Image (cartoon, rainbow, N blue to C red; front, side, top):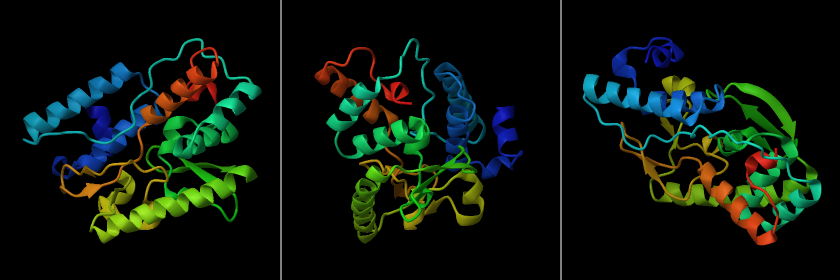
Length: 239
C-alpha cells in the first residue's frame, strides 16, 4: 500500500477514489509490466484498504490487466501477418493493424484517446499510464481512411450517449484533480470504447471505458485457427 500512496504523492486518504485506484492499476500493468499475480496482490490490498479503513466497497474498477508471461511466441511471418490482418473485421482489424505497423502494444493501443489521433498529420501520440507523452508514431497511409470512417462511427456513438444524458469518460488521475473525475468532451473519449456503459463507483455515473484486450486476443486466436496459421496467434506475435 505504501507504493500506492507514493505513486499518488501521499494524498489525503479521504481523497482516494476510483480514478486513483484505476490509474495505479494501469501503471502496474503498463509501466511496471508486473505479473498477473503481483497485480492481484495489489488489488486485494487496495480492496482491504477501502473496505476495512474507508468503509467502502470496491467493485469492477476499470483497468488494464497485467499480461501473463508469453513463452516461445515467435513473431508472425509478414505473409501470415497480412493474411491475419486481412481476415479481421472492424475494430479488431484496426487495433491489430496499429499494433503491427506502429509497434505499440495492445494495452497502449486500447488506452488511446481520441485526442491522441491526428488524421491531419498522420500522427498517433503514445502516452504512459498516467497520460504523460512518450513519443509520436506515424500512421501508415492505408490506415487513414479506415480510421477516418471509424472515428466518425464512434463520434456518432458518443453523440447518442449525450442525447441519452450519458457520454462521460473517466479521466487519468493527474487530470481528474483539476478537471474532475469524469468528462463528456469528445476529445477525451477512448478511441476504442467498450460496447457497454459501466458505473463509476464514487459518482454512480455511467460511462464508457475502453474495450477490453481480451476481445482482440480472442479474435486473433479464432481467426488464426480458421486460417490454419500455426502457433499461438496473439497481439504479441504482431509486435
